[in-house]
Amino acid sequence: MKTLGYWIEAMRLRTLPVSVAGVLAAVAYALLHGVFNPTPAVICLIFAVMAQIASNFANEYFDYTAGRDRPGREGPRRGVTEGEITPQAMKKAVYITLGLAGCFGLSLVAWGGWWLLAVGAFIAVGVFAYSAGPYPLSTNGLGEVAVIFFFGIIPVNLTYYVQAHAFTFDVFLASVAIGLMGANVLIINNYRDTDDDRAVGKRTLSVRYGQSAMRRLYLADAIAAAVLLLHAWIAAGPWSAAVPMAYLLLSAKVTAEMSRRSGAALTPLLGATSMLMFGVSLALLIIFALR
Image (cartoon, rainbow, N blue to C red):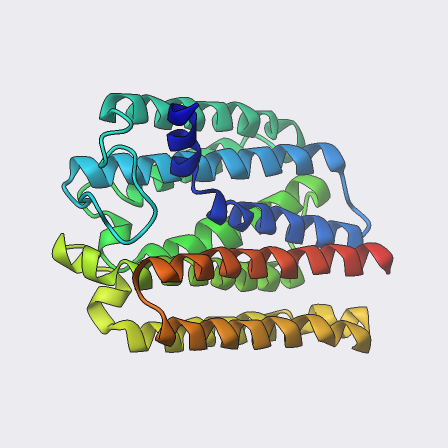
């Protein structure tokens, strides 16, 4: 049971709402446009969650093998670094989880066409490119950009496409908004780990530009996301304005808390940020379903 706990911790459950949020947002727009199809939507959800778990496993494995992790770091414990999970077991877990995600993704060809295989391959490359290869995105200040694409633009638009067989501009705007919300989750993560990352040579945005800049970027992302979703709240009616207002107020509260906390005390803000993203997507789903 103790070993199982290490694996659950390695999945980073606090961050999994990030992958769920993108699918929920796409389903919301599918309901709005009258093209909702539950089967491919559920497959997209399973694929998204499994791909994120594979990415979390890969990040832990490759950071360990590259010497970018050390015991006693401020963030959540990493089983491989702490000696609780062997590197070989984590490497196998990466390929098994990614392989299972690929099997579900392959079935989406029935709804979206064979070109989705290229998209799936691109996502698989992204899982490794984030923390491995000659130019790891996570160590070169490109992690937030990767999140915008892999947890916003790609999943929202493709989940919508396999239901509607079309792309629309309002869904694209929503996908960028969701991606920015997801980037804020990574901002909190890297903000917390600034000192640890600097010590091992990781050049995240927080290491490069400092924590003050990251607090401003966090709030700017939240404002931009709310603006990009204005069309949704206008379409839903004036009463729905409570959603972006609540999101912005809570994001401002998180920003203020970032300046008051340090180290492990920042971890709850990571979970709060992922739940804010999830909450906005869920609100879109409920609002569009009730129209």
